Length: 86
Image (cartoon, rainbow, N blue to C red):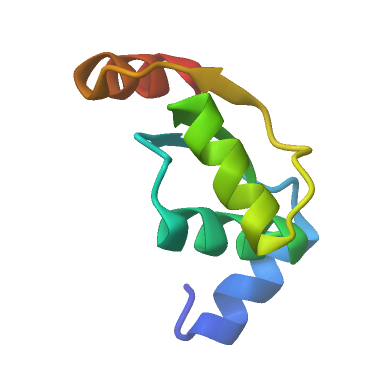
């Protein structure tokens, strides 16, 4: 059983990171959070949303774009695609 965040982190780092599919990913805080988790080896990710806006945020935040981006400008469709991605 996991009792605290440190244990969760340790377990995540010792295994293959889970895949996170992020719908409507053109949100700066979401991008920052996911990129932080990926950098620490806690997750792998796919961004689903407006590709140009996501790439703009990645560039402004100084993140390289090794994360796949599935372009979908319609938010409802982005949610469906994100759900089907993982």
